[in-house]
Amino acid sequence: MKPTLPGIHHVTALTADAQKNIDFYTGVLGLRMIKVTVNFDDPTTYHLYYGDESGRPGSAMTFFAWPGARRGRVGPPQVTVTGFAVPAAALDYWRERLKERGVNGLTEEDRFDDKVLSFRDPDDMRLEIVATREPGGDAPAGGPIPPDFAIRGFHGVTIAELGPDPTIALLSGVMGFREEATDNGRTRYRAEGGSPYASAVDIVKVSTESRGFNGAGTVHHVAFRVPDDAQQTAWQSEIGQRGLAVSPVMNRCYFHSIYFREPGGVLFEIATDGPGFTLDESPESLGQALQLPPWMESDRAELEKVLPPLRLPDWR
Ligand code: ZN
Image 1 (tube, rainbow, N blue to C red):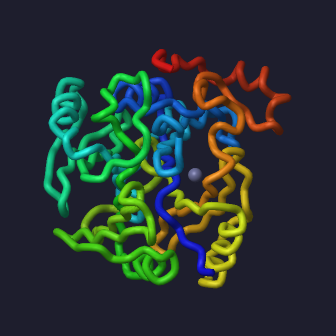
Image 2: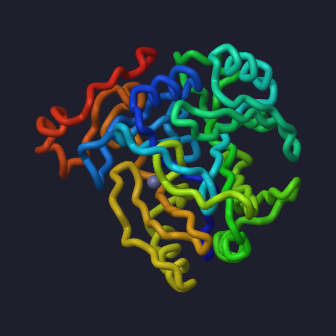
Image 3: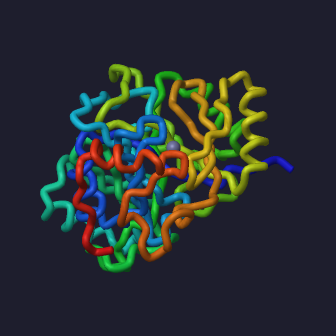
């Protein structure tokens, strides 16, 4: 059986200021803090996770917090915009809320069948709220956003490429995405068999901008979902057979990951749905205390000395 990738698992970006990031994603956007941990590859820095009520795959926006990191440049080849999904009736609420909060760069457009609000986070990273018809996910309970209006997870991502053909060939020829529509230089690909949520990958061809590079305010990688380890291994071999360099399976505790650069140059990850964020915390207490992988527990005292203190949201 050919394995399928039912959509986006998480998006990981870079912030220069963990506290401002927490205040914005939980306080303004009303996402739930679902995990406070360290970057497993650099445990003196935080890895912050936000999501819906249960932190399901398809809702996890994550950040490597690099204090004082230089600003990156948004441009190809990169995930240049991350889109969150809200119910269609929530558009007016979000327009007013983002205006009231003085969020930067707020604009609005029609795209395909949806209304889209575009704006920037405190690191100047581009985000979108897409008001769409079929909400999925669970609204975070107890947060600042009324549940009917809350962000339910991702809508999708926009990827800018200098020459998108090899990326499109990978997405549609190997990864099972199907072309859905084209509008104004943007072509939407949809994960096979995915729900309408967290399943859209928009490809835009960008020829005039300068190349992007990673730094604060840019997306580091996008991860796609697989249900289990066996399907991940199947993908590892499938991607490898296409001549792309794939990493070994990495244990990220809450999921297992493989990484590869798609032919256009964007870092892709394939991550398992399990074990999930309740591996080391109860569903009620997600994201309320620093969690370390078992192999770093013995370094906890030292790490806690080095990691800057954080003010976590008080609504959970
Ligand atoms: Zn990742």
